[in-house]
Image 1 (cartoon, rainbow, N blue to C red):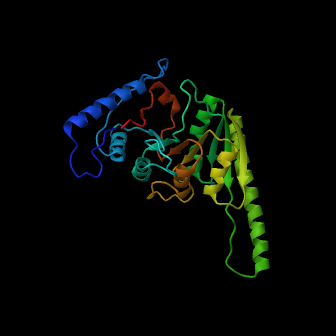
Image 2: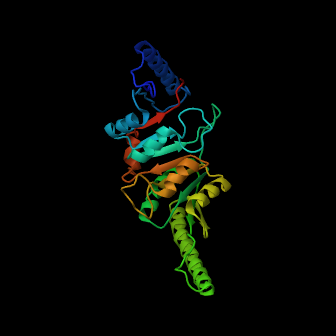
Image 3: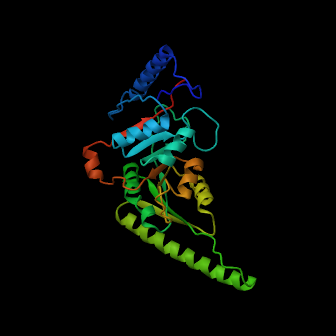
Length: 280
């Protein structure tokens, strides 16, 4: 990715721009050729302009179902998402694999041992299960199904009555959540996928899922861009947006319409654009 001089209001020097372009093209070729024993076919593309705009345009033009990006484009101690990823998450329509830029040993093979699938009872949240199952089978991983029961609230009234009713409502919601997850776990196990369930009571889904991913040493979070609220005029739900910036593990955000026909995709490799940090 080559950008014009930021904030300068003038075009870049043509000689400097050519030098940078050649350097970036060479770096892309080195990335594509490493490791040398990688059987996958890796193509490279060098785009010019604003990173978020050009990546979104490229994904739409080539009908790419997935963009894989580091949460930060360059080495940074910034907490949250880099500006490019923020813009793509906010405006793009492509599913995203967001990976924290932590160093990985050159020859270490990435294996997912535990996948976290947050569920809120909606069909949208459940729609990622076929994809998560596919990944779990490939890696021999366990799927952790998680549901956070929201804190029960009632219109203000007598304190003792409100406390009693809230307690009963919370117990009911937790029981139904366990039954719901147990049913999905049974279906996964019948399909040959290891699965477990976690019901977190009386909490905020955003922070509870972040802490859960850390405690369970989750290797990959798989979740839908939209959940129960179903506000399709928004790029993603509040839980997804929060986890994208704060999750301690790589995160696969599945947009509506993501192709789950794996038998067809195995015959025709899925076009995935992997964007790596480039040297200045």
